[in-house]
Amino acid sequence: IGDDVLMVSGSDCFGTPITVEADKEGKAPEEVANSYHEKDVHLFKDILDLSYDLYTKTLTDQHIKVTQDFFVKLLENGYIFVDKSSQYFSPTEKRFLPDRYVIGKCPNCGFADARSDQCDSCGKVLNQGELINPVSTISKEPVELKETQHYFIDWPKLQPKIVQYVKTHSSGWKDWVRAETLGWLNEGLKPRAITRDIDWGVPIPKDRIPENMLINDIDTKRIYVWFDAVIGYYSASLLWAQETGGDWKSFWYNKDAYHYYFMGKDNLMFHTIFWPGQLMGFDDQLHLPDLPSINMFFHLEGEKFSKSRGVTIEIKDLVEKYGNDRVRFYITLVMPETRDSSFSWSDFKEKINGVLVANIGNFIHRALSVGYNNGFNVSADKIFPEVLAEVKSSFSTARNYLEKCEFRNYLEVILKLAGFGNKLCDEEKIWELAKKDTTRFGAVMTNLYFIIGSLGYLFAPLMPEA
Ligand SMILES: [Zn+2]
Image (cartoon, rainbow, N blue to C red; front, top):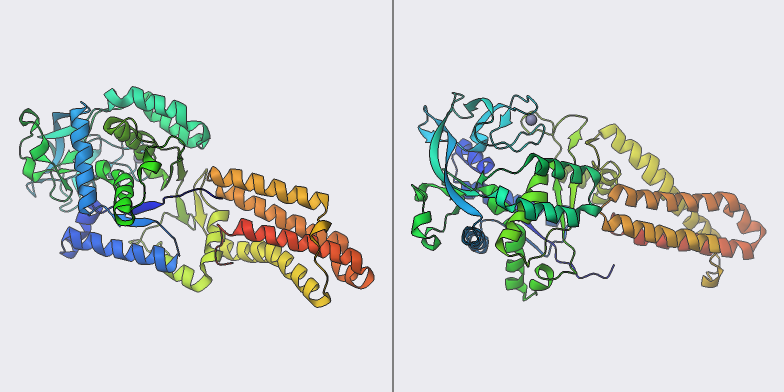
């Protein structure tokens, strides 16, 4: 639609999911992270045909340096302080165990296998010490809290800026996204540790920290993944500019730019509260997130996806068997935009046959085949006023939905326009008209072709192969 777009993303390489797997397989974390990255690059580019301006990873020197810049700047600006914190420590393993290495009962919803940093069931972000009956995932033995010195981000100090940001930016957000964000803010933000006792993460830039702000055992601590991962959007833009000569500032220091972020609901707080806060604490001239396009959870036949429990579909297999367009069509149709939804094999079949084929496919096929078999002259000045009005309103409604990332509604517009075309075929009885009144037939067919062409444009972003 004529806008200048920069689309960047990347693989999140730090954090305990990587080290847990590396431990299990006896590999280096870097090797595990790189192998996931390569698989994802292949999947996105070669299988799903997604076109990023840059799809990078958080292991690059660029990202590590930019993360350290954020750290130093937030420290200088008074948003990072040093404090002792209690971290889980395993007496059996004689070491600190971050996040995914510790599980227990969620204090918020009672889920039994909640991670110590966030509950996978209700999504609540947890602080160390909140979990009930915490145990090590390695030894299954109970863990205890032990004091250790860390850097903390001062969320209470940033809270007024964040509240102001949400007030001025959230009018276009989905209602539940705004409500959940305001819920966290009303509860009041607490300081949160941004370093951990681990060896896999962005190194703390100790040479750039004033002496009175250095913490104990700084060499065995790292900046933690929740702090660095979101910085990836910004560092990727800088890397893109470096590699292509592109003008990153026209995206980040431009009040007319519009920033979209795409994620699942477990990442909500990191994008509607933490990331805007980090940006404002780093440089208050930077463009803040405009629209977080957040989905709820997508399940498989009503069950949570889980490789270990076999509740899984390989996207690669799905796409290779049924084609990208059918998969994209179905997933858009049932996308969990406002509530959790499910991929269901029987529903997949039903929607492809009953909606894509029977509604849209049927309309296009019969109009084209009747036109082809009988022949007619296209004349652009014969577009009926009601057809023109329907197409015009479809385009303007569709554009509005697309800009708000309401993809299900976008698809509804397409289905409605195809339905309108089907109705015109029926009302005019085109297969009889071809024999009875060639002038009228030519006019009707011109209109039907006009609708088909319009559907083609509307379908392009949704089903690019069609
Ligand atoms: Zn929970």
